[in-house]
Image (cartoon, rainbow, N blue to C red; front, side, top):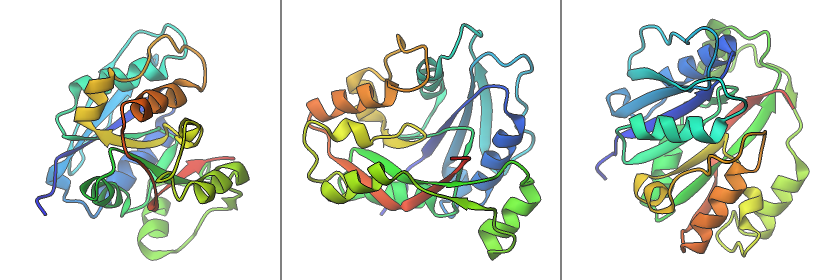
Length: 228
């Protein structure tokens, strides 16, 4: 299988510690780093984020601070992205080393929209160096928090979204959402009218489902959200 160029779009606002963890975790991906294209989409932070030197291509795009505009930030990042696979990761959601590879396998297997497994841990005091030791050596793991039961039940009931009906959108979480560029452009990206927390991922997923997209919850694409 020829591996694709994967663009990881990270919406960000005023969270340099969280962003440093995500960018460090992306250094540890087992997907070839020369096939990783990272775009930090800043939603109007007072200080523009500086990703620093990384072993993969990374750049920052920014929009004005006009309220909570995560949907618009993701679209901004997608426009700047170069990959045929778009992998959206929130700035407080840290991928395990096999995350991108698991997404690529799922898409190669026929999925058009992939939802990773979002787990939860207290990462507030974790440094990039500590994160490396945890993810690579299993040393110094943070406190693990409970996963939402309703999500697990939804994935179990729908065979990890393979058998999902018109309620499939409810189990699509934008913090761990990946899709093909083709599908993203066909449906027109995220609806930028959303200017408060939540909802834009469900609306996007429902449009994808209506278009006949194959949805999949990839249990092996694990990322850790900071906090419950």
